[in-house]
Structure formats: C-alpha cells, structure tokens
Image 1 (cartoon, rainbow, N blue to C red):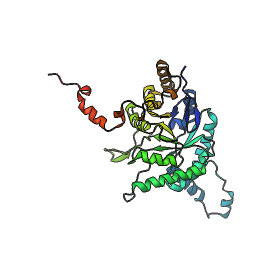
Image 2: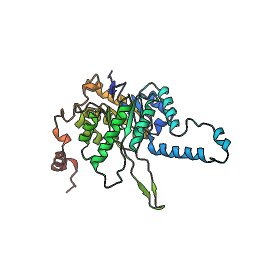
Image 3: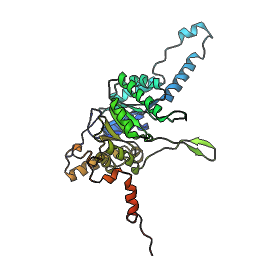
Image 4: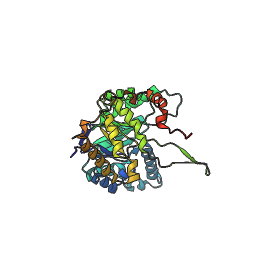
Length: 336
C-alpha cells in the first residue's frame, strides 16, 4: 500500500491534498465532509480587509445612531460580542475544533497595518498555520514594482515577527521576476509558497451595462504554470511548495508532485465533481505509485524538476521553437 504522508511547512499531513479556501470551507457541514473524504488539510475561507472595514463601519454606525438622544442610553446599550470580523474568528475556532486535520487560516488584506493585527487574531483561534493572499491591484501608475514588492516583504516580516505558527504566502503569477521575489521571501522566513492564486477579473453585462462577477472555475490545463515554477523552485528554497490552480485529477496532482511540489491545493474540482473527488484523486495517486513501485511520495517528488529532468527543454522558452519545428506532430495535415 502506497504511503501518501507529506509535510507542509513542518506540519505532518496524511496526504498532500489540501482543500483550498472557498465557500465549502466556510460551512461546518462541508468542512467535516472534506475531512471525512480524506483531505490532508484545509484552508478556511479567507477573511478580507474589505469585510473588516465595512463591518466595523456598520457596527460603529449602529452603536452611535442614538448618541446624545438621552444620557442613559449610552449606559444601557449592551456590549456587542462576536459581531463582524469577530464572528469570523469565533467560527474559525469552532472549525478547528471540529476536525482532526490541520486547518489553515486565510487572510486577504490591503492596508499594511492590518495584516499583522489580524494575523495575530487568526493565530489565536488555534489554526495550525496562516496563508496570506498578497495580491492587490496596483491602481497607482506612479508606483514602481520594486516599491510594491518591498512593501509586501515588509508585511511578511511584520507578520512573522508577531505569530509563532507557520506562514505561507499565496502569490499571483504577475511578478516580473517571481523566482527572485520568492527567494527574497524565503530569506525573510516565509514557510510556504502557494503557486498560484486564481484571480477574479471583471466582466460586464452588456445589456444592463453593469459589472458582473461570474464564477471563475479552473480547468485541468491550468495547473501547468504551477508545475513549471514548482520544478524551478524544487530544492532551491527552504519553504514548502504548494501547487495550486487547475488540479482536478490524480494525474494533475502527480504532475506537480513530479515537478517538485510538496503538496497541492484544489478547489474547482470540489465544485465540479463534488467532495467525494478527494477520494478519487488520492486513489489515483496511490494506484499509480503501486504500479510504478514507489512506496512513498518522497521516492518520486521532484524527479522531473529542472535539476533532475533528462529533458531540459521542458522548462525553457525553446520548447516553443521545438513545437514549431515539429508542428506536423501536433496538427493533422488536411487531406490532399
């Protein structure tokens, strides 16, 4: 029987399947079903800064709506606990207590001063690790890429200085030199790198002439970007590598593990194929390992990384040239 045990940011996992942050990790029933289906870990649905600020503003408005109407009102108004973002923290704590697999808290902030404050509050819920979603749209054209990256690095250092649990960063692929930035983050002590965030982009309803927000599910082919960078980073950083985006099947998972990922995250396949797909993916990995004679994932992890693959074209731009030169292999010739 294949041994699927893995390690992520120092956390022992029974297998490398991590259910990523989504609405399914925001409800106790589906959280329990994800754990029962065999996931190695799960990431709680993210807490967003917009939620923090909006709910704080609404709460303050409600608390002060009757100010100065009567002196006694201020003394008689009850304290409000577990409101707004605090309710999220209470719910995360209950989710952690409900399952016996590692639970990772997720945070998505904008203002630098908010990151460390809420990272501490999430850590206090008892989660096993934190995942920071750093991407924000750079709306100011006068800001340089270097200043944005420096700010993000400073944020990571502040969070690492405040919490004792492992911290991962979920990155977008839109950096000029992602490998250089990841190495800088690794030096700053980041414990894990999630490659890559699936970002939502705007769309319009052309009849109503308004914005719309369609559900943004991935397809199997989307995991290839994570595969490339997992292969380039394997053995090059101290932090763990988590492949994300487009992992739907056991074959997809095996590809990123062969490239060098320590674990992988999946979300879209949970929606498309239901939570029971976790068992299917793990079963496919196990069957392949048995067929290949691998007793553990460590036996083949990184076997096709850039340092180990016998085909160096895999990670180079020249592969496009190679494909063009062999176009007849990919495109059927029309009948004469």
